[in-house]
Length: 378
Image (cartoon, one colour):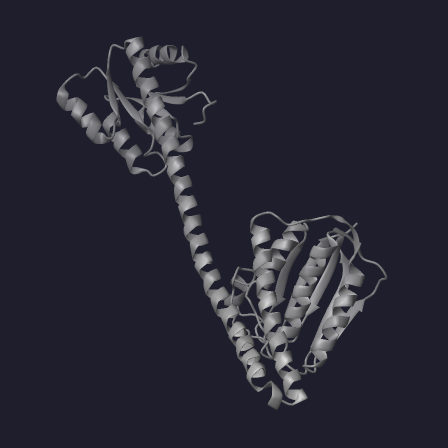
């Protein structure tokens, strides 16, 4: 029941005159009243459309009010409805029986309008307050669960940062110390080799730092985005040329297939480049030596569609479930010792959403994977 809705009250009594009296009393407060003549019908009415409160006669043929209330309280769909008993019975034992059955109050006949309205209004207010309290509790539970999840992610983040940054830092420190101590005795080739190792370790650290900053920008809503008409073809062509050289080092044949001259999409050029860079670099990173990668650009159903197909190990069902998750570690591993942060596909998914596009993967274990990106065409 919202603050703007008129409360819905089920009035159950086998005497038509009593139903009329209660209906007239309650309508002075603009309550919605549903008169019901017996217990069996009351149960069905409450289950079909749960009211905000029930006024329930005790003595009725077929099924007494006590039986009706007991059944209502045993049903998870109706157990929350407050029940006020109405009866000519005035013995304490009858009132105790009413409370034991699950009732919250007891009104004796003949009815006094002021008493009926006071009790009904009070219990409706209590029910509303209880409902709001329950809503607040559920929100707090959800927020608490979210905080627990964020704390777990924070701990995971610190663990990854400590591990993935410590190793290359240690390597850089070791090679720098070696150069410092043995510079005079080192050959030029040895110096160049150490410099390359330092550069590679630095690149790993730069990739991790960049990914972590990207994740922070995404989750804090601080991404700079400028949507415009952008031709996706040159972006993929440039990335394909760049990664072809890296693929060649693994004896991988990377081919870009593009049947048309232009593929305009309504996107942000920088974010689109970042998404495609991640997808293509992953294909190279996880493809076995001597295989091929096919990148296809096409129009499909009013979208600009890019498919990145590899011949790697493919994805297991477990991998598919966590594919685009944060810090996901899949069963597949880079095939030439390349570095992986577990954040790339998470960033791809989030950035694709910002671009109003879609990204998914079609794969069978042992048969490679095809990552598909669809962007809004212009």
